[in-house]
Length: 474
Ligand code: AMP
Ligand code: ZN
Image 1 (spheres, rainbow, N blue to C red):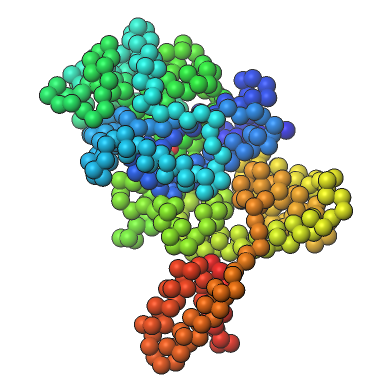
Image 2 (cartoon, rainbow, N blue to C red):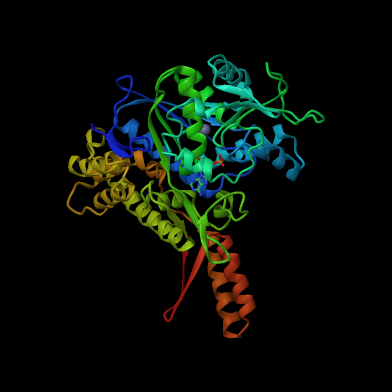
């Protein structure tokens, strides 16, 4: 058992060693619940799920905490602009609380559809205001804070190693600053507590020793991570965009409050990118307005597990360009897998020694080596296909091996079943195809297309060839 993981802090792939033998504490930055998660965000959560499943496969007891950001995340990560929650509430005519509840439920539905294991603890920023105030108080007592006209700020110049995670060039940043500094002393200083405007009541605000206001976004994670996982943390994750600001600030706050090193492993998932309509590629983001959700993929007839499979085709530290062609390929791979699984399962069900059948060691060794190599999912998938296509081994053992691999892959192999289509649907499909053929013979292509669309909505794809028209379930 030797799980090797890349650590953004050391820039190396090192063997994972937990603080407490046999246990792993994991904190993953959760969603800001002002909108649906886009499929880029979901890539990060799938990466974190693979990490957690790999830890479980290695025999660790995993204590996983995920926060829910329902206050304090401003439009710019540098404490500027409006609160994303307030903007979302105004956009949708909901209260901020309704907005948070609605999008948290949507998020939980999405991760369920993707077979992402739920965290051991969900914690909402608004439920933990006191925890955050307490951490700001400690920082104040230790002399790391100062007051400006709009809040209590963290003075990053008090630390020799501020920005060590991102290897920030602080002097270069100061010299090249283009952002409005307000009353901030240093470019990299950030808000711990923001005051409500004097003449205005904010939608979300709380009393504090410094005045009415709301916590900064970064303090939420370090305060809750320490509360739920203790003063030393094994692994902290997020997307790569968190390295420079959010996680650098979390480290500064937590280590100054605690007085010692906080987290051993920092892991970051790379972006899902998207070809923009103007032709240039870019990171999928909510602010650009061009983003795809899980609901949209389902409306288009895709199985969420096909999206999970698509994601596993790239290593988490590499950018991945989304395309529907890629997703189609993943969907047909899942179909093939399903066919094989159903066949092998029937061999397993009919096997006399079902109770004692074990996974095949040689295949499992290949698979485990891929997982232990910094979660190399493309290699792990290749190991899975090697067993799925193995024609020499015992078929019941093949089924058991696929099930064991799925503990990490999370493709829902145990639930895969033969597809059954009701007889009346089959005859409806035949009638529609005949009608379409007649329409096309009469050059009524509009009607032909209409029927094709109707079949697509039913989850049926039409395939025309010189030999005639066939169909398959999408
Ligand atoms: P948010 O809800 O905006 O706080 O983001 C949730 C998570 O998604 C964070 O860990 C981000 O780093 C991550 N993320 C944002 N955009 C992308 C993207 N295009 N691809 C992958 N992860 C992303
Ligand atoms: Zn965070």
